[in-house]
Image (tube, rainbow, N blue to C red; front, side, top):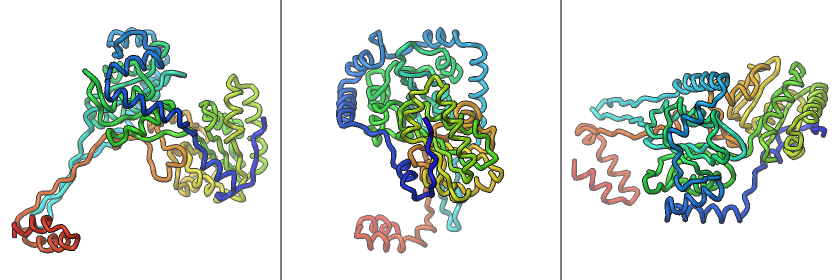
Length: 425
C-alpha cells in the first residue's frame, strides 16, 4: 500500500474527515447493552454470572478471583518483565505524586471562613481489557493515580478468557489490589455501577473496554462517575525535513496496529521530500509486518501525510485534529510545542517515541481521544478526588451583607431564600 500525501490546511476536506471519524455503534449493540444493564441491576449475580459464562469464559459459579489464584499466576512472570513493570509502576507513581491536592481555607475581613475540602473517592472500579490481549499497563495507569489520591477500595473487573495473565497478576500483587472479578463487557460495568450481593457499588468506573463496555459506561454515568468514553486511538507527528522518516513511520504504525480500523495515523510536514521518504518507509514497514492486514485497514481509512505550506500551517492542522498523541520532531521543536493548543500528550524530540509514554515514562496513557483534547485532560490524581466547599459565615459578615443577599434572592422570586436571611438580621 502507499499512504497518501495530501496538500492541506486545517480546513481541508481530508483533515475534517479525520476529525469526524468514530467507531459507530449499532442499534443492536445499544439494545443489548441496555438489556444487560437492566438485568444486572434487577437480579445482581443471578444475571451477572451467566453473562460472564456466556461472554467472558467464566467456568465456575463464582466471579471472584481468589488471592491464591493471583499469587499463583504472578509467580509465573518472566523476571525481566517483572523488573520492567516494577520500574514502570515507580515512574508512574513519582509523576502522579506531583498532582496531589490539599484542602484549603482563608479568612475574610469580616471573620468569615471559606474554603474547599479535598477528599478521595472511597471505592473505584477499574476495567482491564482481557479478551483480545493482555494489558498490565492499563492496570498501572488506572490504579496508580487512584492509589496516590488515597482511594481505599479498588475493584478490578476483567474478561479473563484465557486465565489471569502473569503480568496482570503481578501488577495486582505489587499494587495490593485484592478484589478482582472475572467478568467483562456491559455486565461488568453493570456490576460495578449497581453492585450485587456481597459486592458494593463503586463511586467511579475507569478504564477502556470494548464497544459494549464503552456504551455501558455512557449509560451508567450519573449513577456513577466515569473517566471518559474512549474513542479510536490516534497519533499525529509534526515533522520537518530533519526528522528520521523510518522512526516516524514506526511511530505511526504503533497506533495503526490497535485493530479497530478507525485509528488515525497522521503526519503534518512542510517538506515534500520528507513526505515522500516517509511514505516509502511506511510501505516498507507495512509490507514486512506480521500485522500487515490490520495496518492496511487503518492506514487506508485514516493514514495520511498532510503537506502544509509551512510548519505554522502544520501546527494549525494538528490543533484542528486535537490528537490523543502528538510527536514533535523538528529543529525548532520547542517553538512548535508552544504553538500547540490541543493534544492529549506531547512527545518532544526524536527519542520520545509514543510507546515511551504508553508504558514507562510516568505520565498517564489514558488520554482524550477523537478530538476531545480540545476540552479534556489525561487521567490523573484529580480524577479520583472530590471537592467540598466550606462556608463558615460570621455574624458580622451576615449583618454586613445580608440585605444584598436578600435582594438577590428576592429578584429571582425566591421568597423563603430571602426570609432565611432576614430572620437573622
